[in-house]
Image 1 (tube, rainbow, N blue to C red):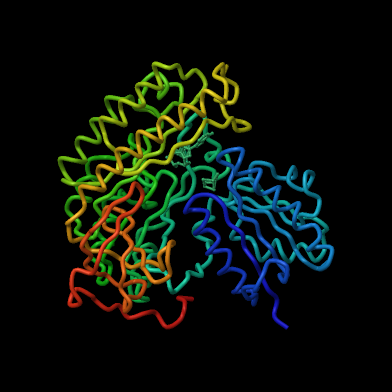
Image 2: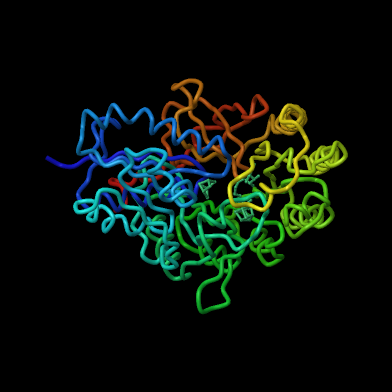
Length: 452
Ligand code: SAH
Ligand code: SF4
Ligand code: F3S
């Protein structure tokens, strides 16, 4: 009988893609996906440590696993990802049912780690292997998905004072350009029309041994036949050099959208976050982007309630948001993370007030999105069909190049096709539309099997 695996994933796209690679490694060892968590021989929890709440979810699930493991004593429970790296042995101390703990940079060692479990009772590996990407496994991607992720670099050399990522993901290391282009070609041949390049500081991508950077990667990938859309995330404003912006403008496949986390509108706070730019420099980058790529959509991340944030600082964040008019925003209340500089800063603002600020910021952003989405009504947009709509299975959901979600009725459509949609209605978070004409449907050959 074959052995079965289950992977539960939290966190960013990088973590989700790591899970696809872990699945690839397990399938390489002869494991198959389990029908349910309880029926699995190996359960991996690929975790996120970015905020305390994300960490709590892991321990809540682990508590629920105890009865399942009691019924199936051979079940191996592994905790990987950023909580594993941050807490190491601490995971097994807090949850003794865990057999295996390994960090993101040790994921490629999974076969050896599982083998060690035959002899040892508990195995922990939090080594930050520098060759983690080179030794990386082939990903198992869902063939029904329209888009594929490609990790171009690992780690982060920045020192943002609130952030655990440099500790959990280690120093930056980039994959060779040739390797990446080979993967791009493979994915295009398998039928993926949209690719997203991933890195915690993707703008710092640098091909080992050469001077080639992200701009060169975008230009080269844009020439690969079959690649219709390219995206990359996450961009750091300080590292978003003009050559990258020019490549965005000149390579037709690069989408008209950029996620550019600002974190705060107050230069004083940006300094205590050690972001390396101030309000003016951020606004100048936005100006350059809008000049070079007219109509570009921008999304961002904001932290409210960072230690020392005054009413005045918060007002500056609101005013920056009003000035830039982001198309989408992810906002969070500051969460003190173990081992970070910001966790040691004096913080006098009560949580209640921080939550009020978050609500106020989100209400403002909602108003901006409602207005900017309403301006899309009447336009005909190219939409990549992604999945059945969340609201009703009779409809499809897809995205425009500007990363706006569009729901539309199209009985014959399939994920991975491009359709032309006329926008008919707009909400704060999505658009609705109708097919602009049957002749607008371009068929994509579906991959027969998952690319191995
Ligand atoms: N590499 C990315 C972000 C990774 S984390 C970048 O540089 O932007 C995603 C977002 O989580 C961050 O942009 C930030 O807004 C938020 N975040 C990170 N640490 C946090 C913390 N300690 N508390 C609250 N939000 C945090
Ligand atoms: Fe964290 Fe800053 Fe690195 Fe982003 S750039 S991962 S926020 S340290
Ligand atoms: Fe979370 Fe780690 Fe990503 S902390 S956001 S899973 S890099």
